[in-house]
Image (cartoon, rainbow, N blue to C red; front, side):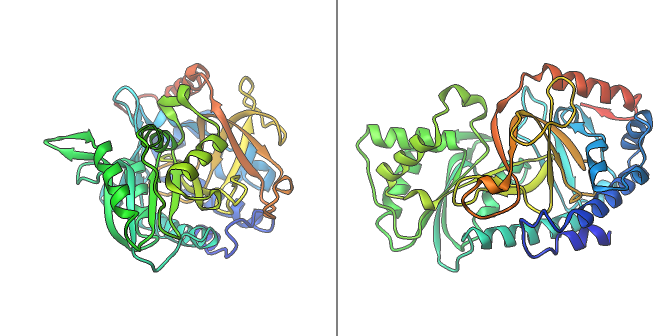
Amino acid sequence: MNERKELFRVEDPFDTQSTNDQFLAAVRENCAYQYTNCKQYRTMLEKLQFTPDMLKRYSDLKNLPFLPTVLFKNHRMYSCPEWKMPMKVTSSGTKGKFSRIGMDAGSLLCGLRMVIKIAKWRGLLSPKLTNYIILGYEPTRDNDMAVMKTAFGSTFLAPALHRTYALKYRNGTYQPDLEGVIAAVQRYCESDFPVRFMGFPSYTYFMLKKMDEDGIHVQLPEDSKIMLGGGWKQFYKENVDKQTLYHLVKKVLGVSEENIIEFFGAAEHPILYCDCPEHHFHVPAYSRVIIRNVHTLEPVPNGTPGLVNLITPMVNATPILSVMTDDLGVLHDGGQCKCGIASPYLEIIGRVGLRDIKTCAAGAADYLNGTGETV
């Protein structure tokens, strides 16, 4: 898998201009691997009359069949034996259904290279001992959720002195401990070590709002950072605009906007999208984004809203080469951002009703002809 390896060795993590040929070669290589090693994936491509050698030009990427993320919540599809997967990650899941994505050793190595480059660019690598507030799940041996692993992994960007979790595992279940988190914030602000928050913006907002209402305002140590990821999900009705959240962070924690960093990603697309100083998600060199018309699924021009189709050749163990999310988004020209990065940037504007996605997934599932494991 040399093409994948070479792509993830690209030094500039946002060079989507001169890496098109490299990216196409890596996608073609990955597609051929999935076609050969995953019976379900090959069945679907054959039904769609698509073969890996049809990826001849960069413009052919738009013709690459995509799999809806909801399909992975109902079928297990792997392209290598499970014993060859050092790690599996799961989505958060809805109504008891979740995706389980197998990660091969090569994909983990590529992911590590990607994280180091992007974290270095964003100023997240630091040798300073750091206290962490994780507004999410305490790790357990049986918890494979991608959001939990991502949050825990973020605590290695700067060496962890302490980790405090909002959801603690007690007596076989997760229990919220917001009071304990607030107490830890007050305790950490008295130390000389920076504090880093990691969690959903919704949970962060709820914690800050409670602290504000209770009159608890602190000044976190210098170099403290607020790291947000995962969106508002089921709390979309309580969603506040970014400036409202940033203002509350400054008021309650004393942390300025330049030290607020946001992330975007998915279990079915394990690429790190980290915002620039202007808070835009520029597409990294290791992935490409196609926005598709909600009704026709045809690509739309930049600046036009549609469904978000994510492409990356990072993972061999699971056929997540091209996935369709249930996110509505807009792809903007990179030149519109003041940060200077030329790569286009993705704006997530909401979620589409799942009817169209489920219909698309049902069609894909029909192609499996009983070869997939339904869960």
